[in-house]
Picture (tube, rainbow, N blue to C red):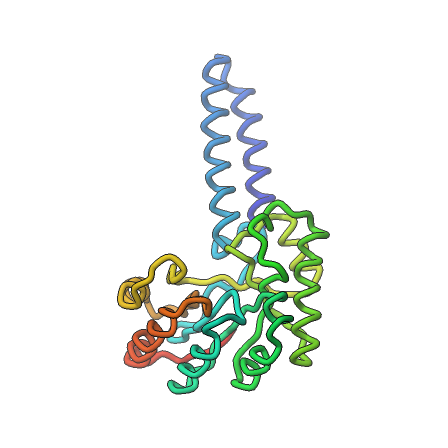
Length: 244
């Protein structure tokens, strides 16, 4: 994707700089600037799925559509979130961790029976996933897929990278497993912000009604309270709730 183009541009820029600038000190200066810019672009590409730097992700929907998505379940508050969604008659997307699903298959079935989308969020959700080989990432994805397929009878087709981290190894592993990467347009930061009103205001401020995918977590009690604020607001905007 864009990563290959960036490497080509970097190589050409370094070559032209060393070829056309005779002063050695100036060459070092310009090469340093070019490398710093490349590293900045690389950092953004690694941590921001919507940049589509390593792999094309589903990062937005059609204008007027909204997807409420939840990561890291099934977890303590998943049932409360499911009850809240049922109360508002909303379908959402749940990106489930394999080991959590393995330990709590009944909740996975509850999600499925509610008509919600179930996606893959790796098996362990390791903090060092960005340093794993293609083989290791592939094992994380395929193991979670097998568990979810065993519980639901359906093979997941969507994958959300833990922490939003992407790189060439992860991109290859996603493709090798035949999955589609899913990002987001609005990150609620509900794992860091404890106040539902603050989370709601943050989402409301960033909402542009241009096909938003909102990232939430079913690991937080205040996420349940946030839903009771955000869903009525979104309905007032006339949105259509969909999944990827």
